Length: 185
Image (tube, rainbow, N blue to C red; front, side, top):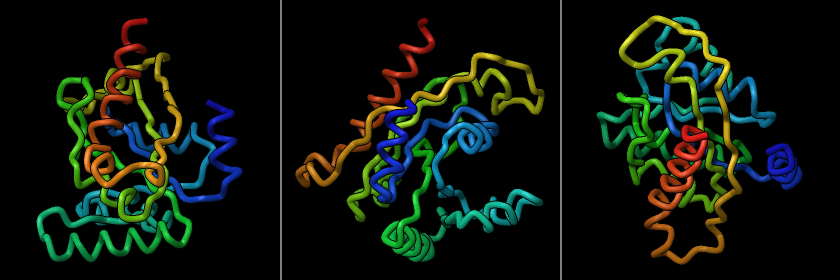
């Protein structure tokens, strides 16, 4: 993992980090353990959350309006502009935290930022945060088995238009396979 991160940092190019979404703890877990500069693509509602909203604004997070298509398009154009300016972003393409602890299907639209900018995609698999705090509870249970698996970057520049249309399934499979491997150890 360290060598993959080092190579990413050396290029200086923006990257789109695509991760499964297990728990409210995923954001601080990624921020605490990945030595990269990045912000998050988040739902618009988070902008007004006490403390977190202000902190996310300061990080240059992009807030997407998922209910208003026109505003959502403007938000996405803003995100594309930021990536072209060198910013890297994390996207949770399942759309929300997992209901059952498994990796869900990825929304194709979540990959538009990467496909429109040809930014590399870094598949990230989070394991163990669901056991700390699931979506169903506010209770926090200690878990020393939290893991982040960083896979090799997916290079969109080398893909055909048809391959890019299926990249959400390609990355979903990478993350699901890593998740299953880690869970079965």
